[in-house]
Amino acid sequence: MEKLTLTIPKQKNIALIAHDGKKQELITWCEAHKEILNQHFLCGTGTTARMITDATNLPVKGYNSGPLGGDQQIGAKIVEGQIDLVIFFSDPLTAAPHDPDVKALLRIAQVYDIPIANNKASADFMITSPYLNSEYEHEVINFQENIRQRATSMKKE
Figure 1 (cartoon, helix red, strand yellow):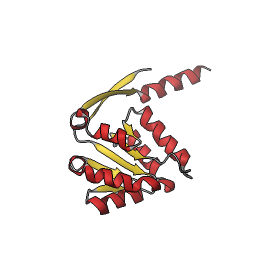
Figure 2 (tube, helix red, strand yellow):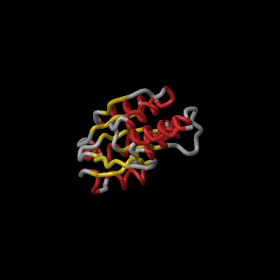
Figure 3 (cartoon, one colour):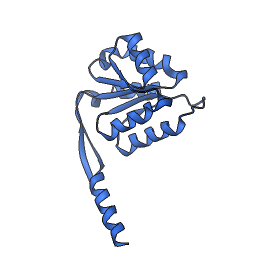
Figure 4 (cartoon, helix red, strand yellow):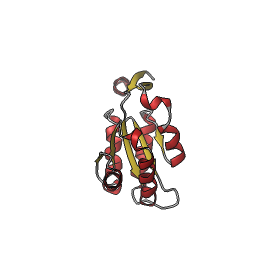
């Protein structure tokens, strides 16, 4: 499969997401890393975004709440090239009614080679990485070429 080299810019678009049981942990994490986060563009799912802004004064653009389509909105922004990394404090011990949406978000981040941290330890490693404050080149599938090839092969059948 043909690949394209894309560049994640120096100033990142960071999505912040947390399940209900992990929201306070993410807020505390954001407060601890406020100086770093303030240098980037932040967005998140509805309740989480509002709670982070209220607690830290960080500007976080809010989308819908996760169960109301927010995870899918974040996934769409990844596809559009408008999210560069995701910090998602998920709760592995509590069932979520929107689990298929969460899995779709994780899958799309993987497809587009977007870094995703799903707990405090991985978020700590990500936020302190030298890549956070520099451009980063990564390869993704050339989806337009892939679609063209698939359409051509289907016509032959």
